[in-house]
Length: 161
Length: 240
Image 1 (cartoon, rainbow over the protein chains, first blue to last red):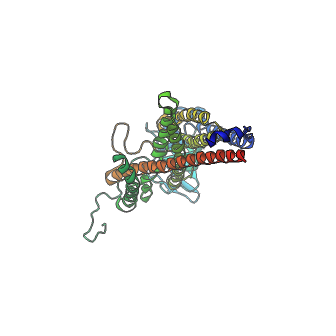
Image 2 (image 1 turned 180 degrees about the horizontal axis):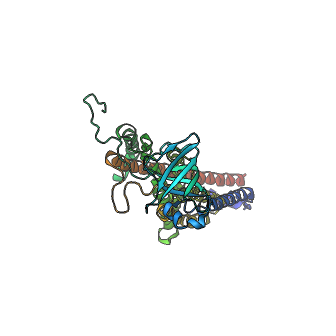
Image 3 (image 1 turned 90 degrees about the vertical axis):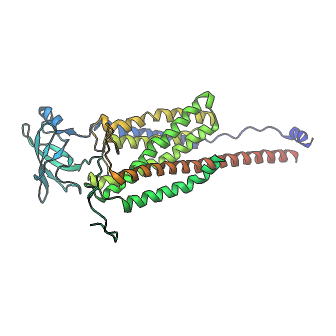
């Protein structure tokens, strides 16, 4: 039984102390992540839980909104877009036949067009006016995906007409 | 036998479905009426987000719950939770990147502080915190228990992300594929390609999870082998 003999000669030693540096570093990372979550919460969820006001919401709280900056959502009315050197002006409609004239500065996004939902950041031009001055146009595309040319047929050589 | 076959087929099947997704997405499906060719991101972004939020994080949360339940408590559950969470981080990052690439030409901005995007970013931070928490504990049982509790708490964020587009006004679009009434939003071959992409990326997750799990097992085996070796060496030193 050589193993039994060996065990008599082995004197137990204390385990080496665990270096606390790694643990503190990890706890530091956790604290930084917790602060990042708080920053995201304050920036994203608490400040702009509702990212925009619809035109109907804005019109119902028109007096309260005054000339403060907020984001307004509506659909671009067809044939009303006038592209200018500084941006674009157009009419935007809501669900209950409310329409607001928007004069926006800045380049509109690639998808900006008639009958598309948009979110415009800006403010009403005066306390009582229904004209809206926009500083940024965002396109709010829908989740509907339809082929651009569903009736196109393939020619025998494989090309699409 | 069936299990072995499934394990062997998982990799090749994933690869075939991913190739099929990209072929259908890039060459076969038509451009969208509004978004044109930008809509081709439909075959990547929703599938990656599906895996990140529901499949991988869901796996981690369920494995964590099973670890906390005494009947099913085992090292296997802890390992699965840990590995699924690591893979989930990769998918969350890809979700945010592909969403950003899609957002710039469609919305007009790379990032918007709306509820869907912000809550997804928060989930990514929770996952990083989970991994940091695991590194903060040396005791395996304590580490597994604490991280399992944390994973379950973090899972509360998943329904918030899911319903954020219904609860609040968000710039992010609503549900993809079907409306609340069950009406189709995506049409024809575009819908089938979307479903294939969801399946392909789900399989990719399980393939990655399996590889990561095996790596973890090998790492543990190596650790225990080196510990045995160290003990044997100590005994030999005691003899002399």
